[in-house]
Amino acid sequence: MMPDLGKYATAVLGSYAATAVLIAALVGLTLWQAARVKRALAEVEARAGKSDG
Image 1 (cartoon, one colour):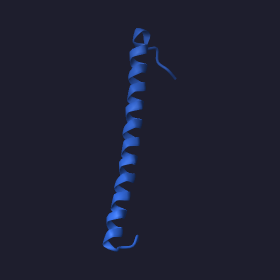
Image 2: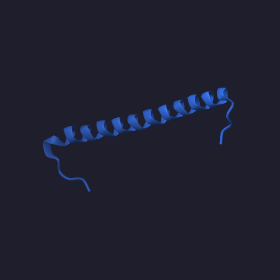
Image 3: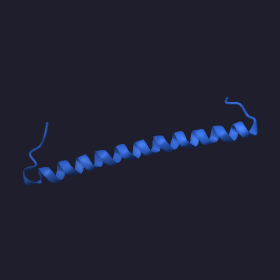
């Protein structure tokens, strides 16, 4: 169900699209950083002689 946006349709839909792209980028960046930190932690633990778990 899409409301009638009139002359503002382009601006509103563009804002929705930009927001969706930014949220997706933030989620992707967060997942990438989490994987990077997890790898770094595993390296530190390996140097310390600890096992996983």
